[in-house]
Image (cartoon, rainbow, N blue to C red; front, side, top):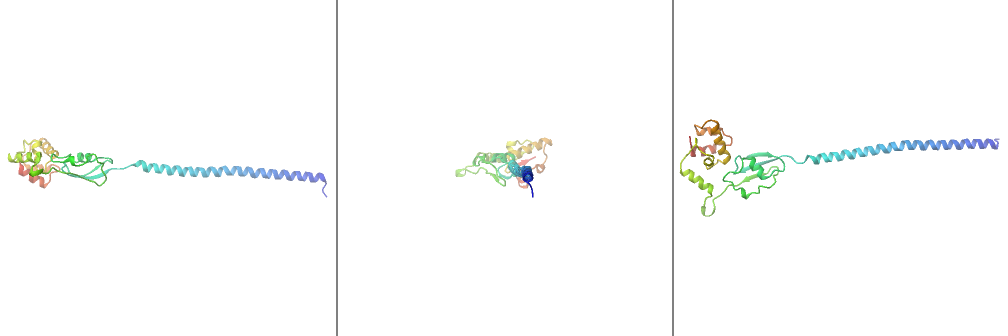
Length: 208
């Protein structure tokens, strides 16, 4: 049978072992818990940061170029690509500008372009009681004086020919100057923007 002193010693040893075990368990929990929290937080922050960054990249790309069809009374009708945010006036200028017969006041030059849009610049029409506009009157006056000399024709004179705008008229004068003159109306077929119908009008109104 154990004596009282032995029981006290054994009890003290047991208590000491229990205290050491409890302290060891708390230490282990304290070391493992921050690591788990830190890992979870890091993963969450990383995912959140990556998501925010991806969203910003998409928004920062903004728009792009727009492709528009410019037709009607312009120097060089056709399909053109312009930067996003461009206006109707930008498209008309890109297409060689409005011709002398253009009725540009009837369209909104400040309107913003959209991709696939068609910009049509209307031409002047006859006024009330069959009155012809000034440009038509000038053309009639030019026709009454007979054919225009290709060797000395001015931009204004060439602009009176049906199908020829100020831009094409200037191209003809530049072509004539670059080649030291033009001996045949057929040479004008080399100028960009002059098609078969325009050539017929030129043959009818011009002479070498």
